[in-house]
Length: 367
Length: 79
Image 1 (tube, rainbow over the protein chains, first blue to last red):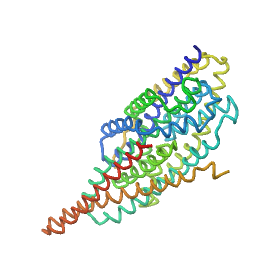
Image 2: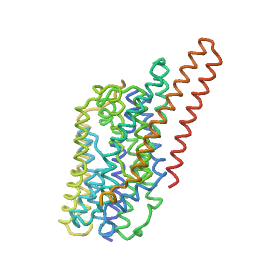
Image 3: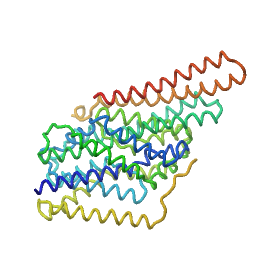
Image 4: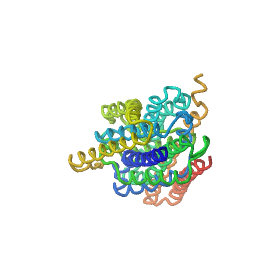
């Protein structure tokens, strides 16, 4: 009975995390389209939400990595997964509250690793998977997106640089419908799979699924729905940071940034690397700006974002470990997770209420 | 030890695929826009043959973009 209650809480918390992931990452997916005027905010967000949903169904490689390659499923319990999820959600809320992009994905992995270490020790962590499939791709991906976007915009300037600006700008705006759509698809497939992986890990830990099982269809469908709903709900504060504060973009830069982001995320997803769309699209945005003019990139803001990125894994791990400790105060049953869920809910409501009192959401400004 | 931890082959394939797809698609799309722009210009100057040629180049480039996107999605769904 206790384990079923905890499993239910894990599934509900994972889907809530998926929702916050979509909510938090909407900005990364649609900011460039909105800031270049390629799409109205409502249209861009609706389109991104739909493609997030579709994207969640096209691969399960990343889900397999999260479920089987980061922590040892044999020593993991549903309570550990629950505590890790709370760590990730708490960190997402903090960065959302202060308008800072971070990485929902790394928050999730950091949270689970932190709670697993607190519960079992470092033996619970699969170093090969964590380093080889998470940490190294996490460093490589934004740099790769930076380079791809930089080379792409350089090449496009050579091809269309002497053409009439009106037709060129209009062309790239139309192109952004495709590149923005691909980015949303890529976001859906990589990020929704992390939730699928976490729920699958909990099902394996609970003995509901075998150690080598793939995510069941209900897990895929519910994760797809949660991330799409989160994306639709939007994240207006962070749109401003990503879309206009890092660099003032034109449509060609937006196209190359989105194209670079989509290419890197889709290729990584194919090989099961759980990436962050936040890292990748910001790398692409900076690359497309730096290729035209280094001073066009507001490096101070980019530096603040990097600090948030660096903090994500350890901060989420610390909160995950702390949460596990709190649940254990109340024993090994369901009481601890239930009380932590109630505390987390009250924190979420407080954060939203304070934010609502703080004024209207920040609108993205076109450039 | 490091070689077993780093998934070198998969990482290199990811880097190659990202470079080819990201830069290639942007290049092809730029050629498509160039074709449209040149077509307008050449048509205005009453040079129908040249206009047709650039229109064909632009269309082929845009078809290349479409083919690249479809190929990418098909590869994704077949693992």
